[in-house]
Image (tube, rainbow, N blue to C red):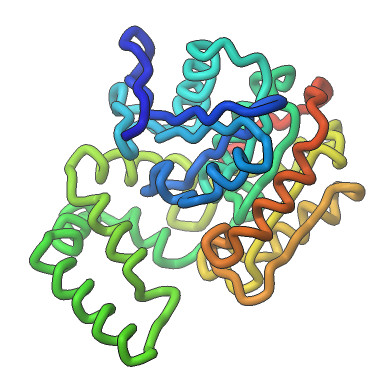
Length: 294
């Protein structure tokens, strides 16, 4: 069970702190997920000597919603509240998907508190996005998700997946992790947070968030970009484009990995993050001002 932040901030924060050396590595999950999505990665980072923090974003996991605002600034403020509560000056930010957008938002607001950035399959780097995410913005989506996540749907779905697995038939896009994600949205509050967060970064025409025009003062050596070359949600070309714009940054493209490369290749992710977070110098010169399209 994660620890909880005392009341008095915009919302209760569910988090886990694993003590170790150096500025902590703060892992920020994507929309609809929670800190458990990282599985053994936090423990493996700690075993290698690093201090690690995982967090549930607003309305995700065991964190409170704090109201109806689920935009990136609100999530970034939750990160700030947690670090203030823990009296931690700087962190190495690792953000996945929308968590990458939250990490960039926090870096834009508080560059002196960021030692490095690692973006994994991150949003905010191009308009293109999976049609399924755009479809989630259509009228009636909340009701449809409520039906899809009902136990009468998810239970037989899990049974079918296990039946297929026993016969050696498996698919990344139809797995028990898919059912886990659906079951997390059975709660009305979590569905509201999921849709609110998604609508803050995605429109019917694609991603609304862009940072590509505001990266000129970022020290490329402090940026690591990781992507799966089979990502069905956000194209790997977004990572390649960012890397091309910032020579000196490190780009790791993982063959065969999907939108969650830390699940497909966890040890590779751990190795890359450990190497990237070896230095605890702040990103004083960062300017990650975010541009949001209507």
